[in-house]
Length: 354
Image (tube, rainbow, N blue to C red; front, top):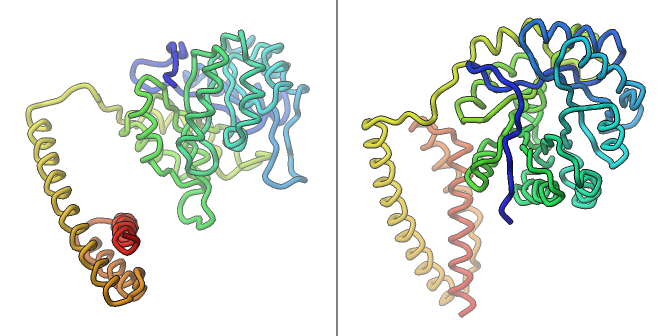
């Protein structure tokens, strides 16, 4: 399904990406309006705040609900900023629109549920409002595209995606792994779809926001959605990933925005070298698979099992160490050889089952 899209029509400065900023939650009217005014003073045009905040576990602050929507109206009246909030149910959509919310986004947990997405799509029929869809919690590009297709199928053409990273049991640096290859593939599949980066939820820590913003810009993302609070340490939710408007302004001021259109003869020549190397890699992979099939034939004739665990472990450890010596991340090399080994096993299985 090809998406029918129109420009989001969101305000931005020529020297910066468009930025949607504000606290994780609209906690009190004073906190909401104070933060908005501080952001407006720094040149921010769009204010975000969570009205409904279902948490991973019950018992924490889960948002003020409808009570907080008049505070968003006050923000718009006193600062002129557009307002944005997350919606997860048709009731949320109805209330947000009734109170004049300008931009809606769909959270990662909702995106992962096609039933919930269809309910939101039905509620959005006939509505002309920008809708941003976060990636699902799990790294599933098809699920993300399916959610976008449901909203677009309801007639919403001002549509965008939010890259907020992907949940992982094995957490290391990031709260949610960026897995940049997934939004890059989304851009390849739907080139005219705006993609907004959410460094707050990817990093989960204030000190990671600046480098993540720069990475997003280096990859050509269209905008940022960042959690900013007038007093982050006292925030009622996700305090560790929120920054003050002053810090946000500083981060934006040092961003390097690169021109993705300008090319030179030098880069064209380098790309030709990459193409030549890729062709050589394909030839080598084809030779490797031919040898794998020969090994499969040998195992068939001698009654051997396909999977030889010791050999597999030896390959991963040896190639990972080689990668590190060559300046390539060892985990990256291991992933590559896991994929190669998976295909080798598949080729050998075909030989055994003939």
